[in-house]
Length: 254
Length: 254
Image (cartoon, rainbow over all chains, first blue to last red):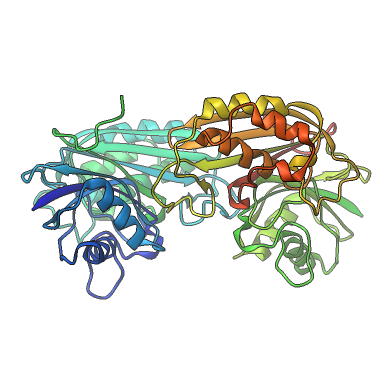
C-alpha cells in the first residue's frame, strides 16, 4: 500500500461540494472514480478541507491509498486523463508516509475570497467572483476585519449545519486589499468553522458598503449569536488556496 | 443623434467573433440587439478591433449612434440588462463627438496572450488560456520576440484571410514574462494584421519549447512567407486589452 498526496485544482461550480454525496456530483466521487479507472481499486479520498457547493480550489491537498504498483507521476497523469472533461486537475502528486494524513496532519488552511466591485455583470469572472455593485471601502473592511483575528467563539459566523465540536477557533490573519475593480480577502487559520469565511466576508462587505459601521463586526463576534450575522457571502467567490503541514508533501521549488 | 463610446468586456468562447455574421452569434449582433431592445433603433456597432471566434476582451472600445434621448449611464445599465445572460458587459459608456470613431480614430491597440505552462489540464482557466505542457523558457521567448519590434513586412504572421491593404505594420513593443505557471505575452501596435498576435505567439512558443532557436523568429519574419510560420496559437488565450485615442473617451481616474 502506498499513500499518495495530491494537489487538486477545481472549478466548484458544477459540484455539490468536495465531499461525496448520495445524489449529487462531488469532487471526492470524481477523483475516486478516476482512481478506480486507473487502479481497479476503491480508495477513499481524504482532503484538508471540505469545501461547499460552488467553492473553488487552487491547491486543495488530499490523499488516497493505492495497492497497485504505480509511481506518483504516472498516477497523476492517469488521474488527469480520467478526470477529463470534468474541471478537476491534479497539479502535483507525491508519495507520503502511511501516517501522514491530508486532513488530520494539516496545521493550517488558507482561503481567498474574490469580490468583483463594479456595476457591470461579470463575463470572464462569472461564477468565479462575487459581484458587489456598491462601491466598497476596502480600508474600512480591513480595519473591521482585524477584530476577528485571534482566539474567539465564532458562533455568529458559523453555519447551523456546522459539525465542529467547538465554536472556538483561532484566526491567524485576515486582510482586505483592492486590486483595481477586485477586492480580495485573504485569511488563514489552523481550521475554520462551516461557512466561517463566507460569513466573515458577508459582514465585511456590509462595512465596505457603509451599511455597517466598522465596530459592528466586533459587536457581531461578541454577540456569539447567528442572528447577529449580517450576510453570508455566496460560495462562488471562495477559493481554498493552501494547506500547511509539518511534513510538507509539496515543498516549494528552490 | 448622439454618439456613445462603449467599453466592452466579453468572454469570446461562445461567439463566432466580434463582427456580425450571417449564421453565427457575434458580439456585434448581441450588442446591436440589446441597443434595439433599449431604443427601438437599429444602430451599427463599430469597434476598435475585430476579434476572432474565441478571443476575449477586457476593454474593447466601440461606438454606436442613438437618436433617442438617453444619458450614457442609463444606456449602459439598460444595455447590460438586455445583454444578460450572454457573457458581454458594458463596463463604461460616454458621449463622444460625432466625428470620433472607435475604429478610425484609434491610434493604438494592445493585446495580451495567456499561456498556462503546466502539465495538468485547465479547470478555472479553461477556454481562458492556452495550455502548453512543455516547460517554456520565457527569457528565450522574450529575446526572440524583440526581432519583431519595429516596421516590418509581417506576411509570415498574417492569415490568408487578412483584408489589410498592406502586410507592413509597425510593432511598438512585445514582452514575454512569467508569473508562476503563466507565461504572458503583451504587445502593442497602431494596428495588427489578422492572426498576427496568435502567429507571433505560436512561433515564440516553439522557441520557448526549444524546438526553434531564438534566431529563427527573425528568419521567419525575414522570409515574408506564410509557409515559414511555425504555429498559430489558439484563439482562446488571446485578450484585447486596450485601444488608444488622441481624444480619449475613457480617461483614467485621477
